[in-house]
Length: 317
Image 1 (cartoon, rainbow, N blue to C red):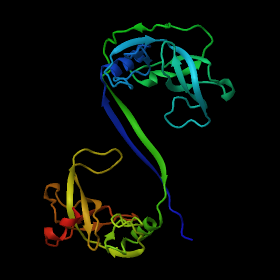
Image 2 (image 1 turned 90 degrees about the vertical axis):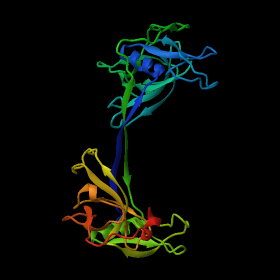
Image 3 (image 1 turned 120 degrees about the vertical axis):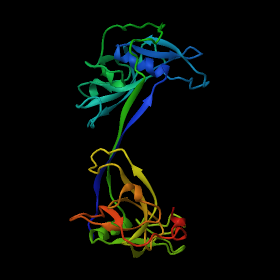
Image 4 (image 1 turned 135 degrees about the vertical axis):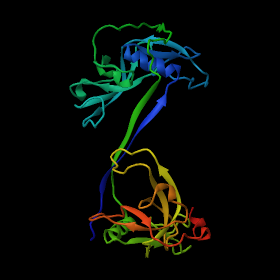
């Protein structure tokens, strides 16, 4: 039985967003150890605050200050904290209805074990030592037996005005997973190990797909007939990259292109080198350049052939 291929993969990017007046006040307030909510037309107080009433869709700006203490409405125990979570020891995820609020805020509760957590227990905010205007300014919640702090049944109105308000945030987004290719892509990867490119032909429309997917995306039928394509191909479309990617040792600018390998009916991605970036063009004929020990071409370079006629690749754009 062939070896089952698998590899750890991570998709990560920084998500940058600007803040409106409500979210700006909420996050700036956390930096100042103030928890703000917003009052709806029917008098409910929402924490975290939103800019539009979830029932009526009316714009709402009536900010109020709620307490830093509250009540757990429901919870779940986290036995194995992951990277980037609020605590590095086992903790409880809790929904906390802060005093003066009508909704619950999701955060972590630092407790010695699941036996120390219950619905209805009283908790309070544990503020982070260094606060920047983010939800992480609340380090976590902790059990609390004292009276309500800084809040009453009637939350105090607040202007939402602070010095040096937070107007935008950068939130890192990351997905870690283990990828296992199926039969078709495993054969494709094995062929690349021998510096060959193999696709699969659809038994219905007869198109050859590279990389193969195990099924025809047009006809929806399974594919099994393997077809070797290339190694040369044609640049169908391309872009010039001017921003250097993190952990990618390629000097900018460089060209990233769709390349239709000879015999394939689907263009694949590849970098074009060996030619000034401003001389890359649609129809350019290219060939792969392999480096020692690599499982895939490092880049494609001009093959020296005349440019392909547009009609030969127009269906692959």
